[in-house]
Length: 251
Image (cartoon, rainbow, N blue to C red):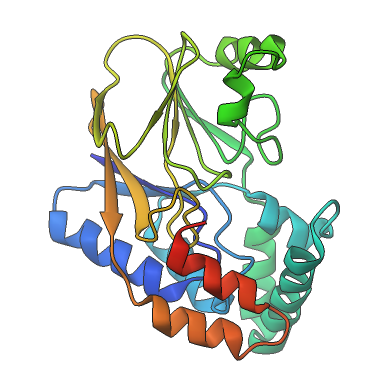
């Protein structure tokens, strides 16, 4: 069984709770992170070091890309958080440790395949940046986008990026994780959004991740100490109160 985590966003209490839940399950063979370990939150160093140690694979997210290449097209709040994250990595890490972490950040892969399963942070068309949204399925949306996305993989594609857990089907439906906590993926083609560990945006404030058995996906929700991370965000002028308040609402 594989555990997929994504979009931790420097939220250590959430990551710690999810890893404890994975450990309690007991038969998870490996953990794969689909990116955005950092950004928005107050705990970039411990989150990145822990993910690098615990995960067999870590993909490049747009926030890792922003730390290395600059936060282009980011909103002002996200940009300030990226700038602070980069400064914190440089100030906290020294010598060989700094070189190792920065080298790891720079060399994160943008995609990975396991047989007929594609893993990306964002989308098969643009593995780091493009959002796959429920609105892409609405009448009047660009149908070529979803056609090209589903044509880019054979069976399953696991993504994060939107922080909204659920399943996109090849007949262009989106099934929210709350409605399909267990979902059979043994047949057909699906895009599975594994949700967000550190900043869910589906009105459920609990951390979210996915267990994958090969035939089915299981969406797991884990409560964590939101007060602890929200307090650390509020105490940091670079991060902004909104990044704290949204955690309570899951948005």
